[in-house]
Image (cartoon, rainbow, N blue to C red; front, side):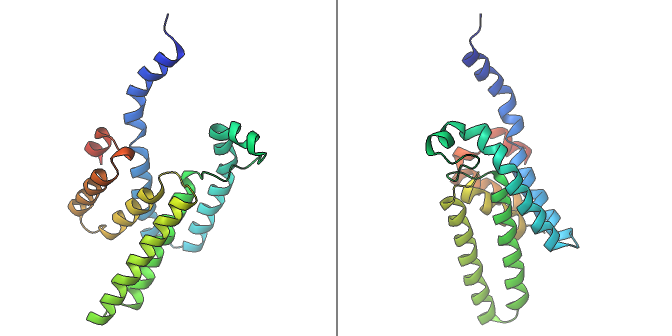
Amino acid sequence: NISTYMMYEKLKLIYWPIGSIAFPLFCFLLVEGFLHTKHLKKYFLLMFLFALISEIPFDYAFFIREMKAADTIPFYFEYQNVFFTLLLGLTTIWGISKIHEKFNVGLREKIISLLLNGTLIFTTSMFAEKIMCDYGAYGVLLITGFYLTRTNRIYQILFYVLLFLIFKHFLNFPQLIVS
């Protein structure tokens, strides 16, 4: 007779590698959606609405004990679902695109652009960590990296490997092979 815990551990070995491919795929598709949408405001609005709508089931699924203890039902404010991470990543790449539009000529403007982009990426990544978004800074950086390397798949892979080395605890080997 197999215990529930043992069954969970065996199933985890099968399903975890398959499921772990999902987040990088979502990040890649978010960038593609940003690049190809004709309705950016609607894209932002839908992402924000999905973040809000999915927060209650997310909190109930993972934090019901904590919500009851803190008397914060129906929301648990200590951890946010993945849609908030995607929204912060979308905000970051939108900001980068606007900075590029404004500062794209001359050495001085490129230095200003680099400083503004660095500040934006740092700020949104730290904000994701502060509000405890699912995947946190890793998620924002992955989206940003996919956006910045969008014209070269080799660079995308190299950036992904770099994040793998920095944020090992978020990734596993099957994810690296598939991406």
